[in-house]
Figure 1 (cartoon, one colour):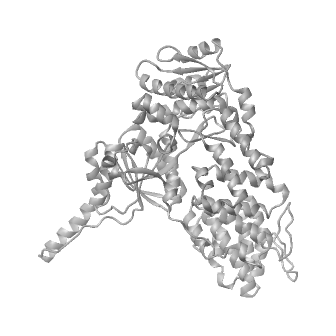
Figure 2 (figure 1 turned 90 degrees about the vertical axis):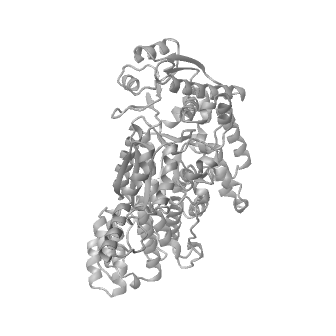
Figure 3 (figure 1 turned 180 degrees about the vertical axis):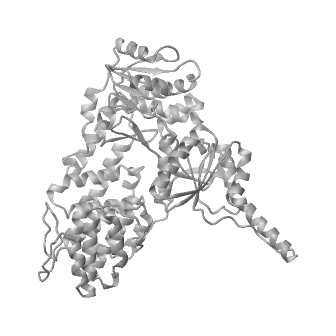
Length: 622
């Protein structure tokens, strides 16, 4: 085990399992305060790591190793990561007994997960026997094993194995813990892009509990045109799965649907710029909103009366008061960031606001929710995914544009905070600079210069093939489609075709012309579900407004989400629920901002494919 690894404290629930697992076989750890159970012959405090380490110095090598492991667990609970690393680096794992070695491996995997190294955690678990087939494990050992394996599988987007472990774990925990455990199962399900596809797999046909969970998750994550349609799906599920654990107490985002149908606003005002420089953006959002509105009416749903107010001229606070006077129960907009800032500082706000942008440094509450399509969201998201994939050393290539600079600043900040390194950053002002920037950043010129010097010294025509620098793990790119299509060939030409490329949504414009997109093959990128997942509403919108297929697509998607959010904002206010929107999975923070979790894809044969569906599986357990 690497002594230099930085470690984070164990989560309290997992720590309790770890400490309980160190108890003597057959001894149940107390629920209020878990302890390390010491051999009866040793007179020492049970929860004092220093006493354990002192005793280890006077013990046989085998006992010393066991005591050191227990001390490390206690210090981990105290957050003393440096001391844990010191102890583990000196621990002779070969001296541990079979059960202690099993626990050590689980602890190792858990710590790797805390470090953001999910693939390494799976490798650590790979040779560990499946706990269900190991006869001498205590109940606490089994709980620990199931919990760590579930987390490792989920961190690697292997949802079915993770859910199976969580369902097995439910049979090992007390009744008092079941509610919190079902919430954990549900939060895992909410990370699955298309749960109905998993539910339809033949291998889960006979797994009653798993299939029921997946079908319920499908109801929660599918984009129904109305609340009534979703509620009807819940009623039918409950009739079919009345013996399922979730039928007893539905997840809040589904249990509160009847309440939402009663409390939704009956009059809504749209404050959008329909003239002036922002008119095209405002019109796209309005059209997306109204498309969702009319689809709901076509499906028999209840839709509010909508008033549209142009904010292109005049004081936005006056437009807000105008909407209040006309009876609006919710205002959606404005769009301009300065206008959002004006309303954020305006008081009193008589009716709530769903703003369609976010302000820097201005926090709000549930009375003014900030909903923006911010490049910063993508930068943070890409940094976390790249680091989780094992990428540590980045080359940044970005367009010299405001959105790209903001995106890359957030990416770099988050990536470095996780432990990554930005080896070099190369902005470019024009597509024609990309090939040159790639060559310079890969140090191809230095390689060629060395070859010329060698030929001069040897006075011979030495055969030579340039080599790129070897201190890079991947390329992070923020560029629009034309520039992006230049990057991949440039990397291949300069001997770096093997470097993975991660990109923002800006590199893909929704084109299905493989002759155009084939140069993007292999690039991993984030984008909104509107572009990546099938949708009847999107098809209708694109037929009515062809421009919705191109660069304006995010704005139409934002309008659609705004329509659905006007009914669901009370549900999001608790911070625990999310909404599967067309712009991403949306969750409301305590400072009044809607965070977007985006969908990952890779270009394959010129078309986007959900990333997890083509990821190579890693087998854990035997």
